[in-house]
Length: 153
Image (cartoon, rainbow, N blue to C red; front, side, top):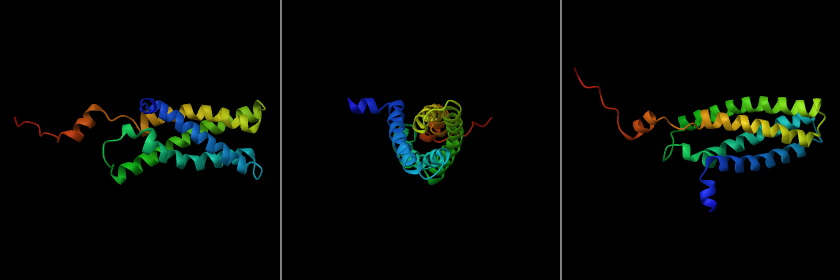
């Protein structure tokens, strides 16, 4: 039953998200007595991003990778795309955090949670459609069958 539930990438994304949110909150709580809330939030976000890539690559989106080991250049490409996508998610996180904390007056911890919901939605869309996008049918068949030269005319 659990295996069937975790076969779905959306479930794995949600589980990863919960774990990363808890890690984010732990780092935020550790730093917030020492620095401004925005700095603690930004630092927590950056730290958790690298842990998130490792979990995302090896578990959350593993079904989107080709079977076997990927070449290092492909893993590095995914890491660069992932970190670029994080910049987009971070911008949405920072804007949401600022809005709910400074404009709406929410407590800093509640603001982190609200901002996390916003950035999680952005992160899912970018990860699903760009970083760990499904290979096209043509790309999948190219991995299986060698390209055939065009017939001579």
